Length: 519
Image 1 (tube, rainbow, N blue to C red):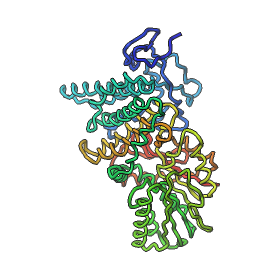
Image 2 (cartoon, one colour; image 1 turned 120 degrees about the vertical axis):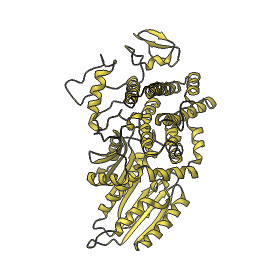
Image 3 (tube, rainbow, N blue to C red; image 1 turned 180 degrees about the vertical axis):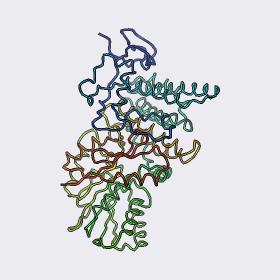
Image 4 (cartoon, one colour; image 1 turned 180 degrees about the horizontal axis):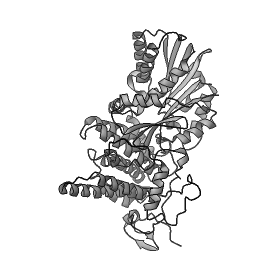
């Protein structure tokens, strides 16, 4: 029997032979591979996006492409990979897939990186030589980054430190899109390793939690504002939410909207300004709204109060005299109680959650389930849920690392298409917003890890267990028209699946939106 894979860099066994070079594990030309941890099975029934098509350099092709189904890629992958023999068969059921192992992720990611690099090569000999060298450097960066994650996961600290020293000169903040995203992952790995070296007997994440006390700094607030203005992700959530809420308003006289997280703490209450404008533009002949009350829930009392005052002034300018604002300052959503919301008889309740509830998806104790059940007991007419669509809350570090690498590579890819290379706005967005998410996913554990993004399928199960029923979104055409207005980049696209809407970059889903009702 072949010995199991060892975390020691000098003891990697392949075909019962011992190798000292850990990069041998990543070589796609080997006839067989050492055992590596497997990642969750990819199920085509629940996803119409190709998991691997978020390869970083793919976004240089700006032509409109159809979303490739997972079956097509899986078939091409199985026919070309040297590891496909002897690993099972898909015969008899086109929707039945084999489990993709960590080695397959490594191989597929590397090959797609090389293939797309080759597509971009020019015809000039000089350009070809430059691209070839760049391709080799990119492949090496991918391999070193994943090898470093392996070493950190196995607590091989000396090998991880050696790899980090090699990675840092090539993971550039103003480099290619993959170099930039790699710089964020390098920092996350470095933070995680540093904490283990300083506090070897303390759980990972305590130091990182203390480092995040400046999460509300002006730089991060500015980065969030730029994300809202430049990237369509948050605006997509606001558009879907407002359209759904307006539909729920029909025939109602008193409406109470509870905004969990108060739209990420964005200044000026952008989402609700747009909603008020839509109310002001409504045609006559409908039942007049007598009261609109918005309750902001969050942990920044001063910011909530500021947003409330601005919204009241804005409502006055639109002559919406029926608007009221209230706030609930709370440090942890788990402590929210129904009486805090001041619900009144005769008003219709709508709950709005934009990129917020994932922060409560703890590893244990059922915190999120308790919150969802409490919200269900409030009997809302509608609950809007918008979340990042990726699996960053798995129990194993390597699995989360690979999922995050694919997800944020697509996001940095989109930024590459939208902003010039040396644009300071892009640097702020990447380093003060998305980099913070990446570092939290990679370096933190326990209560310190709050970026616990999950897929729409996982949210469906959570919402159903809490008693909610899905209310299908039927606004695909309207959403596509909206996207054409706000974005000039063909790489962004909208997809509908099982009553939910997704915004993705190329073939990679980024944000999901869904609506739910209590009965």
